[in-house]
Image (cartoon, rainbow, N blue to C red; front, side):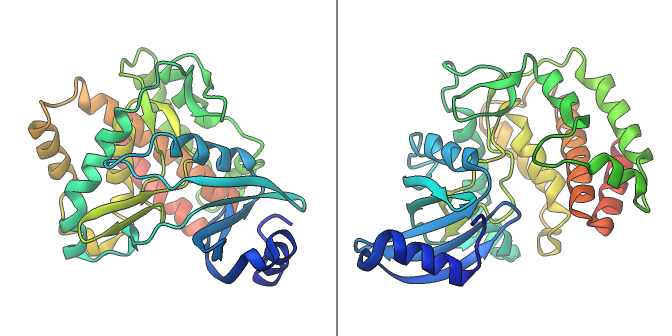
Length: 305
């Protein structure tokens, strides 16, 4: 019962929790899970259904790092649900960062940039590797460059994207040119190793009155260059026309200057992250069959190469 419809979700909740649960309402769905809000034992919670239990377990890991600067909802339960999995977490309230207008984003942007710092400051000394990490706190790549160059590989979660990309109207040429440029940059790339959220714009940040209320969905979290989350903002900014009057690059530079100075080798590191983000976005959109988005990613990659 991975990602059930509302009727199936209500049935699952009724069977598992009975009278302990009430007022279940659909919250929304992403590409990997579907969420509902409800009251459980008198407490507002969210129940999510999806195919990948490791995403939920990573949320539980990050709930252990919650704090005033990095609020992460507590995960109360994880288990099997039919052919998939479910997770119950404390309900966080706020507006979606993605839905803010210009004024709203200007008001909360300092807090967003502070969250980048808080994520990078999480202690990762007991973890291993680079790239996407598993709930056991290990990642496969031995170096950050190796993790970046793995973007060319297919994964069990996104099978067949290469054939889809090659057959698309855009073709694989822009991807290969972007990857060649990434290979030039990544070979001996030096960067600090830190925690990365990896998906801060995709309905994963809740805000209220200029404050961050919750940072959710750590399924794409990685270990690697802390500039990655800044690069994510830069890359994704173009998707949001209501923010185009805000120069996110200038805001980041101002933030770094106020926080102790620019990061070392910032241009090369940011470019490598931007290339990886663009390449992965292109492969993912090909996997999903989103051809207009594939073409948009190709244009962004061309500007980086």
